[in-house]
Length: 294
Ligand code: TRP
Image (cartoon, rainbow, N blue to C red; front, top):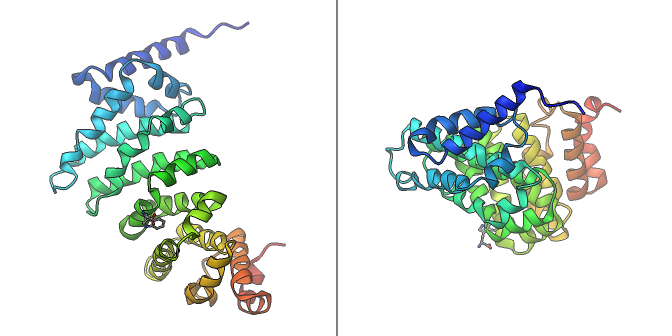
């Protein structure tokens, strides 16, 4: 068996030292920065973070230390950066198959919710919001109904809706992706369509984002919005409601020119087909046909 080259061993030793440094207050800031930079290269960072004594507690301490600043305008970019590095390490733990369920069972996502619950649009808060959504996004990337059920029980949907209303384009895209992943799960679709209030809360936010596309077009966001509507149409009651509340801009040719991705056009055609019936959908989506490969 080939032995591990000394360079790699050395690097691992260095990583372990950085993990230990997280528990030493005056070394923590540098360790957070170095580890968050290296998290992609060092594949087993997540189990190392999870299994080393006091490390997760140190990361959580870092996170809760800025809660008092969330409601005041004094949160500085440096404070926000430092916590974003801590969040990046949590994202690593949320992504790794060996630590994902332990991360959930310890209810760690709840520590991120105060960052999603803010209403201020300042840069430092926006950065915290985006990075927190990145952690939740990493959790839902893998289709696992246990993850979705946990997130639903913690009321993640209203928090995502808030970001979809006030966040920057990238935050909106990630929040919509999370809602989409919830909808794609059968339990999630049922959850959102179970009361009219929930369905219309989601429908209203999606419709507002469609309207905002005119001034601020974002194909990647629009794609997620269309996929959400398309999935909602799988629920009979939601499908009926969409007959009256699906934005006209999705029914006419408003987005013909920049919906260049064939799969997005296909999703939209499926949506119109379900909501309006085959004949009308064929007539209205006819304008897209020439763009469809195959
Ligand atoms: N407690 C609220 C509910 O269960 C949570 C909620 C608010 C919600 N807005 C929502 C859930 C929109 C789904 C969709 O209804």
